[in-house]
Image 1 (cartoon, rainbow, N blue to C red):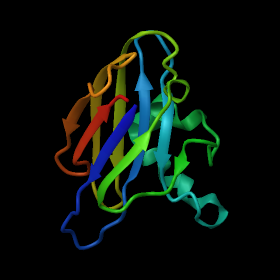
Image 2 (image 1 turned 180 degrees about the vertical axis):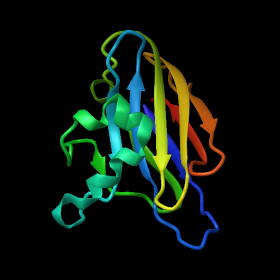
Image 3 (image 1 turned 180 degrees about the horizontal axis):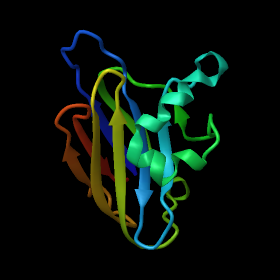
Amino acid sequence: MDVTVTIPQLKVAEYHRPYVAFWVEKAGAKAKTVAVWYDHDMKGNEGTKWLRDVRQWWRVSGRSMTFPANGITGATRAPGTHKISFTRAQLGAAAAGEYVLVVEAAREVGGREMLRIPFTWPGKAGVGGKAAGKAELGTVSISFR
């Protein structure tokens, strides 16, 4: 599955790159974090103290994780369009069925936004879904290869 995320350029006096968490939900199953973008290279692992500002993700699974988390930790991203890819194993999509990709962004001295994109696993090539944010996130889309 490919995920394309647009982080909008905001015209604000003090701009900070957003922390963004991606996780997959399936009814009756534990949520699975697939990526977290944050300031992971700060001295003394200080960037982790703001992860709790990504509130919904933090409540769902973030608070039980150890950081940096191998395979999912990544740096914050600048405004623009970014593409990341996930395998079935990374998504935790062991069984066929209905899933939801949730993307949440929070920015220091800024806002918070969460988008939910339902998808069916296994996905058909080219078929996916998308959602459009209003402030902290632009368009987020998923597609399958």
